[in-house]
Length: 345
Ligand code: HEC
Ligand code: HEC
Image (cartoon, rainbow, N blue to C red; front, side, top):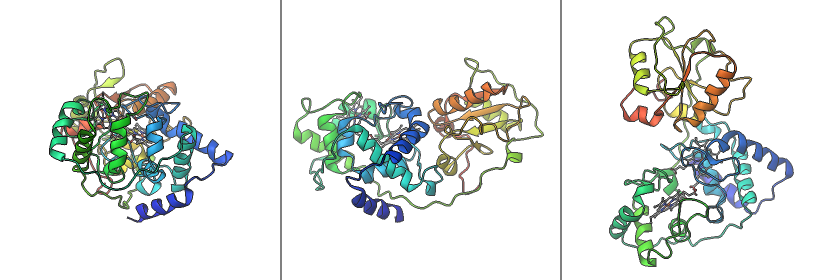
């Protein structure tokens, strides 16, 4: 609540804000460090996990600064898009996030359009049928996102206005898989679709979170007295999650690395996992990790991009038994394997 109020008022102050050279350089560095992994070095999208383009004119022209900043600050829960705000356990301050958002706008070179705020009147039932026929293959039958953003995501719908959604359907997002539906569907049908997507709203708002302390270097090994597990790796790198779950159940000795943004570790993680986010620097990556052939297993939601980055760093430093959980964290949860929330830890 507190956050949404401040983001809104900050938006009013920063609208058309100039970007100093120093701020632009900082934002560009932060972008490469935290975002390029999935959104691509040049903001083109799709580098990992079907992350959207952050340079399409249609997105940058219609996404207001507060929506852009909140997407970065609070993320999109239950997708690979994590919360980056420090209050949520992420690595960036509110100022860093606004600077990054303003920089993204500047880089795109487009003016923000003010779309009308009035709701669009359509028939959500008719929209639901149209959605199944035209949209579900990419956005998911429950709008949960597959190769395209989760349109039913509560954090998306809390900020996306009807006109914002309609604009994307009418105009598409250039240089992405999202085509314009201007020719294929009538204006009335697009209104129906918009009403259907709006009907998925659940009344989400960002809440401050209680953050728990990180494990200390002496606590990194899970089951320190246990026997060495045996894993069969695909491509010398990827371990099926069932093998890891079995090893944990049998009390085998290993280190689990959660390579996602730290806010995601606070939300939920595999019990015993140590937060070593993908944006850690190479000199710090192995701090406190045993380099004695203890198995080190990394995971992320991507399901490989962030883990691969960390495992590559460790292998370069001579760590022998390292692997990435092949299916990623969301599949781990869906399979019913144990997880723990930051708070109960
Ligand atoms: C691990 C991969 C990953 C990383 C790293 C990542 N994102 Fe994302 N991002 C995503 C995905 C996936 C989505 C789409 C989520 C959804 O709605 O389904 C997304 C969505 C977004 C959106 C909303 C765009 C839209 O079309 O709705 C913005 C803005 C964004 N990310 C900015 C950033 C910024 C800035 C950073 C760096 C601070 C970042 N992301 C880091 C994966 C990532
Ligand atoms: C072929 C796959 C595909 C189909 C079919 C498709 N979309 Fe998309 N859609 C995408 C992708 C990919 C993006 C993200 C584009 C980007 O910014 O990189 C997207 C983005 C969007 C967005 C913007 C979301 C945001 O976070 O800003 C909306 C709204 C949307 N689609 C609605 C629809 C609707 C409604 C339909 C059906 C009429 C549809 N899409 C059909 C792939 C698809």
